Amino acid sequence: MYLKNLSRALKDLGHDVTVVTGPPDPQLDRDIPVVRVPCLDLYNPEDPFRVPTLSELSRPVNLIEWLGVSTTGFPEPFTFGLRVYRLLAGRRNGYDIVHDNQSLSYGVWAIARKTPTVATIHHPITVDRDLAVRSVSTL
Image 1 (cartoon, helix red, strand yellow):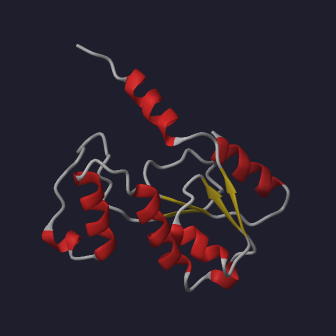
Image 2: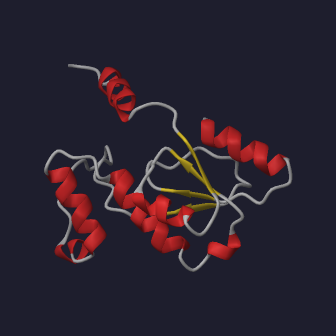
């Protein structure tokens, strides 16, 4: 809801807003452009912890992501930042500011060296984990 409200408010103030996101897809108003950053989506509830193909693992960032998940890590913020850095490398002059919504990754840090960047931290990732665990019903 935070991203939906923030993007709507900025757009209503007359700003051009583009949301760059990974899964899960945010619920945004239809007039807010979204750029989806491809990833392995290893936490997809319809196919959790799937085994990527060799072709997928031939890409270094995908390999980092899969190895991280396979060793009980949570590499998504790190790999998302790398992917966004690569994505924005050719578009840096197209943005006046980048707003990082809680990834705090090295990729976003590198973007901040060339484009003004702000970050919002809502709560530690453990809060998300606890909410997810509580939402699962047992049979």
